[in-house]
Image 1 (spheres, rainbow, N blue to C red):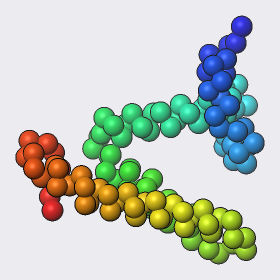
Image 2 (image 1 turned 90 degrees about the horizontal axis):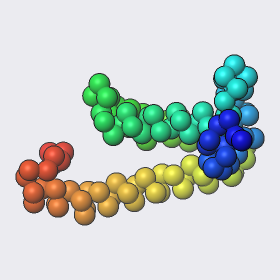
Image 3 (image 1 turned 90 degrees about the vertical axis):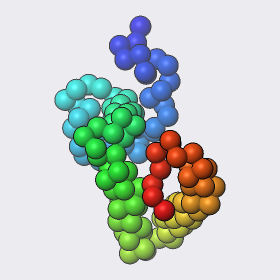
Image 4 (image 1 turned 180 degrees about the vertical axis):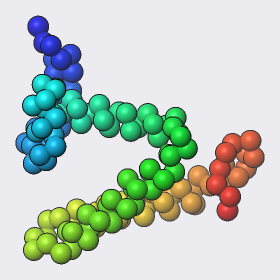
Length: 124
């Protein structure tokens, strides 16, 4: 019998533990709580997603801006300053996808939201 149901269901295998082992705070948290790093990470991701969805304390806008723009900008600068090219490709891929999704939102979704004034939407 498994003590952590998530580990029994294979959810903990979604995030490789070797990736999370690079971070000392994850190792410390695992040793103190005896909770696998992958389960802790997925729980934190679920909590942040729920907080964004429910707009807890009105922080959905600023938090999504930090997660979607500021953090990737910081990691992109680190990637450009590093010697390898693999992380440069990953950063470029992120910004291409980010720009494509922003364009789709602006061209396709915004006119639909403007057609229905009862739906909340950003002002043009």
